[in-house]
Image (cartoon, rainbow, N blue to C red; front, side, top):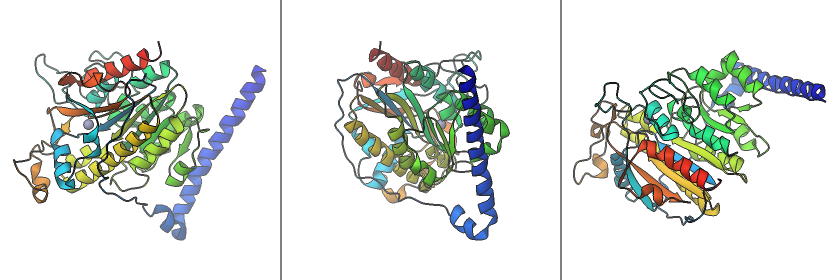
Length: 398
Ligand SMILES: [Zn+2]
């Protein structure tokens, strides 16, 4: 019996390997055919606009089945305010019923000095509940491996998912799963993420699919690898583990298809199950354009992120037992808005930190199952988010 199973496994692996190499060679072929290239490489776009302000009624006094953590990378308080001035109305995230302030500093190298966090240390804090040095992913300051939020959710048989616009193994998603002393080890981190059996991973970074070790890990772990919007649409719940990388590097502009909302809606469809799931959704490129002090593109990223928040809240309204958390890992850009600033005056010059991260506190907004208690205090620390997610996951199951 064992022999038959291992033979079947070998056949399956061979089949999936063939499918993977088939995919890459067919896309190579199409890029050599000028006619096909036109249609194959034409960037598909999705409509981008501010979604209308809406409030959703999510059940609160129910056990937590699903946790959806939405992180606007670099989404400072002033950026939310700037977005609302430009929109001329509140963002949907502002209509979530509970709100508190979050401190974001990372572990200082010299005792007593707070450090402006990077995305890796912030993600580690939000995921594990432990402060660490900048650059560290899922490791404490002594280099010990910490239990990530995906590992914790998996220990309760929950499914897990990550949807981002950056490279799939970039700092924020990496911190939800992986352990590495350098956030820059993209292929190595990606392989660990694949080995950790996260059910759904969508984002950019298809360049790492060229890496043989990455390809082998995808095959060994039984992942389905996809790289186009059509393949994303075609996914079904039967696809248990999927890695989708839809751009060579970062997915860039907010209107590049598949949008954050499109990827998130597919992830929700695939992750929904009786044991619940943990899903992290990141508006990765808010931060990317803040680093360039590019206000127009930053606001487009905010449109896309708030549109996705709107979708998630409407989904959660129909799926009781879902806790939705919207927050940021840190502020970027040192955005300053003078009193009475108008929409026309909100431009690149409002950024004051030369594209660097700051230590400014950020907002956390919560809605749905057990959301009130997370915001009972006026100020919490980013590590408290990890502790709270664990508590409510355990409370509903132990
Ligand atoms: Zn960040």
